[in-house]
Image (tube, rainbow over all chains, first blue to last red; front, top):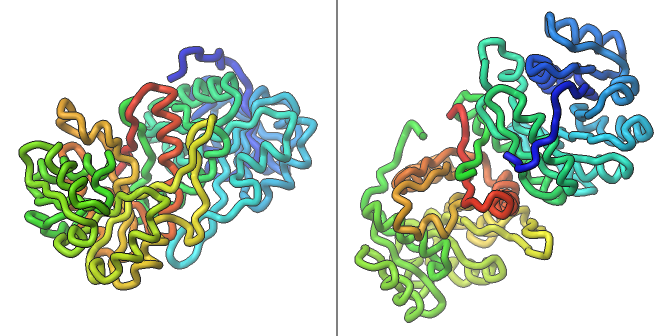
Length: 222
Length: 222
């Protein structure tokens, strides 16, 4: 959806916290699209196990620091409560790289999900604050892990909102999103408007409960 | 999209702040769907003028208090800076009624739109706090006034997220949204999750600028 689509063929994608369902689902879809993927975890053996669970695809596992070093582009898919500490520990490995934050700071209670307050405004803004030498982009918040991992789903029916203040970086991430069959990367605004995109995941969870769905969003007239 | 669609034929819809473009646009679409509409304004003459500008449709104008009293369901489409005061002044007229808040508390600067902090969490939660005897629902945040008012647009291509804690009320508002050609009302969660739906309007404004569009959202798999 951008005029100046970047070349993303062959980029190696690292996924921090890639042993979780969302990280594993993204790993699977990018590998299906032909990109080499390195799943990162605090524990290399767990990362290798997650990679092996995806079958015959170009995915391997490594410790988070190795995944960050070896990848061209890094996706942050760690649980929210480990977000700041993980990124602080990887500042030098992530320097100069495009870092894609897809973390949704949510709480859960009897009434369902709700957004947690974040000092910096959003997980993506926290990443930008912690990683001043990286190019932080927010994207992939609303993708359903279940759908990404389901072999019966050939095309993933949603738009990925891509937010950031660096046009070249958001263009590249849009192009990456486009590589997942069915998905379209749509520019969604500056990083200061990331909070509501992360928080909207709580609404999508409510929708999923009400309609027994795996909902996503599409942007009309674009 | 609900199992128990309420009967909304013939309900009279009041629109507070209906002289603004969004209010007028909603008035036009509901009137086209056959519902009588009363556009409300602080100034009855301005409300009548706005009603007349819509041509030969069942829309009339009145002071906000009369619009609130005479309507079966009331839409709040006032500017954010008059939101609290307007609702406080209409507490008795709005008691017992379904009140649909579509107000987006946004600020604007050189970089575009951004969400304003709201003490109660969101405009809709502020409405619920100010109107304890009304049934407050949040909806119609993302509809483009330009599209609603454009006679060339026969079908409005978007889903309206409907949020609230009163199932009967959200069902009725979903059914109302469905009356606008092309539109679908989709349950979007509880009122505590209204903030991000209101704030997402800032992202839609960014999308509109980038793509020269009148963007809306659709929910997939529902």
